[in-house]
Length: 148
Ligand SMILES: [Fe+2]
Image (cartoon, rainbow, N blue to C red; front, side):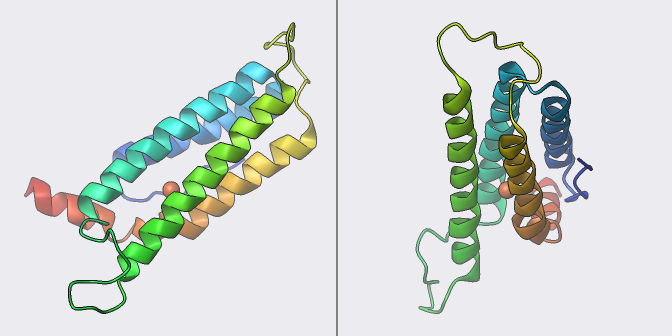
């Protein structure tokens, strides 16, 4: 799997890199341990990304309407973006649960099937191109204002 295009924030780029490395390792090893590593890397990343976005970009948008009563595009984006994180974590947890059984050797290679791996790869690729690319223009700017 190829690396994600830069979103202009080093921490997020590094974490995207770690997630892709974990997925590539899963593609190679196909072990439960590798699948658990993907879940760990992706959940840590989503948590950091949500904190950063809430602080710098999606603040003051806890409901769908802005103070002026108009439609708040950021609130809508926050809701669908974070919802997609939840969906992906739930799918990864379900994948882990589906192959975890007593006595299983978590390091056994070749153990995770193609269907699970293809779905994980697709979820991550679609998420980063659909949602993360949308903050690449605005998040770095919002963060630099705070630092200035
Ligand atoms: Fe995201």
